[in-house]
Length: 208
Image 1 (cartoon, rainbow, N blue to C red):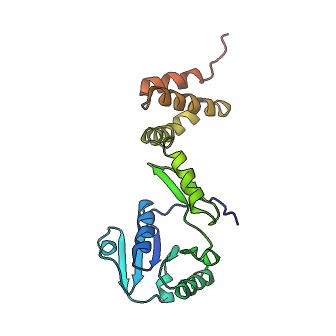
Image 2 (image 1 turned 90 degrees about the vertical axis):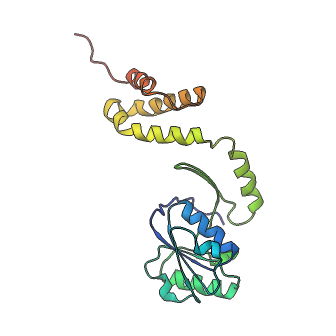
Image 3 (image 1 turned 90 degrees about the horizontal axis):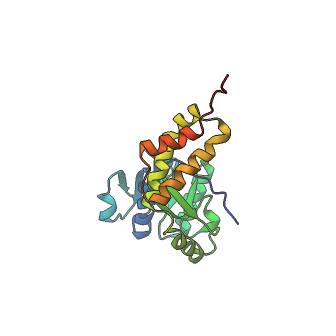
């Protein structure tokens, strides 16, 4: 089954990870990479997890009340029946849940991804073949560079001024020329260079 590729913001959102081992650690790192505030619940929790910023924890077994206030849940215990029970509780509470390696208990999956700044590329095979997603990720590594992330940030900063000064039908061409210029020179264009590009697309009043 293919999954709809929806991106959601997790910054400062509360996420629960049930499990305290190596798999849980990996999921916690991914969630933190996107700014989530993570709670870990497990009878045994790795010291590395306990010492991580933005992570709180409770040593003990999962209880449905652990779902209170959470917006996303990962079931990462080493017990399939427990993961299934957690997933059922999440679905009853209408919470997105990922049960590690139990695709039938998931209503979302973790894609393989690359992240540079605010630019994210994600890959999924519908849970069928991690090897395929790893291959796609490897192919994208040379393209998703720090420069591309900086160019994306600069283009985002320009949106208001471009919308104010350029007609709608010209805006894509403005962004495309600035992006191409940056990629060609290998750095973010200067304010003067950007100004010259925008100037080309500003409508002129006809001479009377």
